[in-house]
Length: 119
Image (cartoon, rainbow, N blue to C red; front, side, top):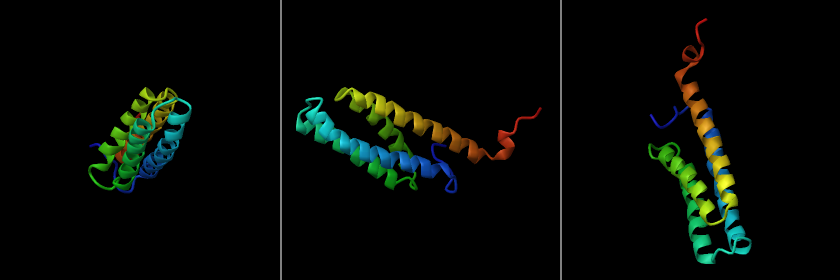
């Protein structure tokens, strides 16, 4: 299963990660152009495309394909480091938050009986 149950509170965290990624990717476009000397076309295309992907993934979290889009967003976030190196760091941070939140959400879905270890 690559998604969380509908009532899992970690869904809100995952949604928040995607929305923050949307903002960061959109704000990364001018950074790519003015600081990293990336041409406006590739910066707008890749940065804007990544921002749009994050927004679509956030909007489809209730659909079966929302989570795969969220995972793809994490890969693209790290891949933006090819255009400006700081995006490696930012992408890895967002991906780490996404992975930890998803793992914690899966543990919540299993319930308290699976979390308690017998002594």
